[in-house]
Image (cartoon, rainbow, N blue to C red; front, side, top):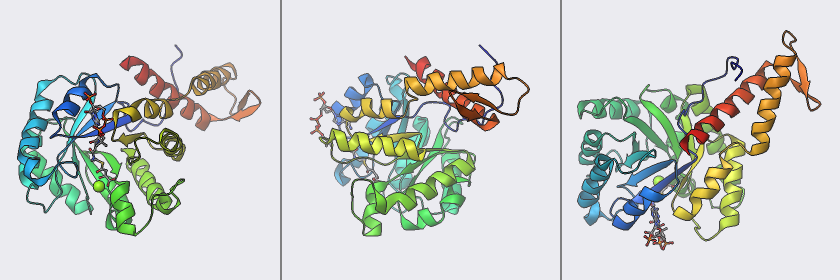
Length: 296
Ligand SMILES: CC(C)(COP(=O)(O)OP(=O)(O)OC[C@H]1O[C@@H](n2cnc3c(N)ncnc32)[C@H](O)[C@@H]1OP(=O)(O)O)[C@@H](O)C(=O)NCCC(=O)NCCSC(=O)C[C@H](O)C(=O)O
Ligand SMILES: [Mg+2]
């Protein structure tokens, strides 16, 4: 295969098209997840777990990570937020379990990111355990540029659209106009800092059409993938956040046209102008496609 010209690094080298939350207190869900074709899992200790169930859920999440039974899936643990009575014990247990990521809800500032990274390191988190910061408050949106760039250990921003809608006194509506400013600012911050970014969840697990429309919107905006709440959402997200067969064919065509016109600053492919920046985009598309193909 042709050596690809320089391309911007893909923030997430590992596909994160479909990242499924599950309550760590739900044994059936933890079991079921071993056979689901999702790219990632968030073993939740926060909103989906009742206060009484939190200590047992913490143990179950750590045991799930240690089991190594989730194959190629990127496994993370969502701890309770800073300032809650569960946070320190959750963070210590997660750091010791060593998942791919520790997801922290309601991160509010760059200083909090640095404190979380210091706490993970103090608790003995291995190098591969990265911080995933949830962006879900007005304060976080206003500071998202600094949050995204606060630490090399921060690998992913995760939109918390339920909390955002609540905090903004907004409403969940098709097209998500009330959230577009927050989504776009967070995307800008993620791309400027070179970290991955995941879209928020779609609450109506029975509304397949609405879910698919929101996946398409997330992809068009630039998100790397979507967080999910139900197994029935995995396939739609996998398709929406993967390059389509047409996009892969076009990317190959663009690279071929560029090679055929070697030395020209500009060529055309199927009647459209191709410059170096289009070659970089095509190269990125093929990298993502190859990474997804390698999962199968
Ligand atoms: C939404 C649900 C409560 C629905 O549950 P249920 O009615 O049990 O669904 P089904 O009967 O259709 O389930 C069929 C089988 O699939 C398994 N299942 C269900 N959900 C999951 C899951 N998330 N992961 C893995 N497996 C799952 C069931 O166990 C059934 O299995 P089986 O019987 O063996 O066939 C439920 O889907 C659910 O709890 N979802 C996750 C909720 C959650 O984690 N919420 C917190 C994260 S969302 C959030 O907080 C976002 C953010 O912070 C924000 O602010 O936006
Ligand atoms: Mg939330």
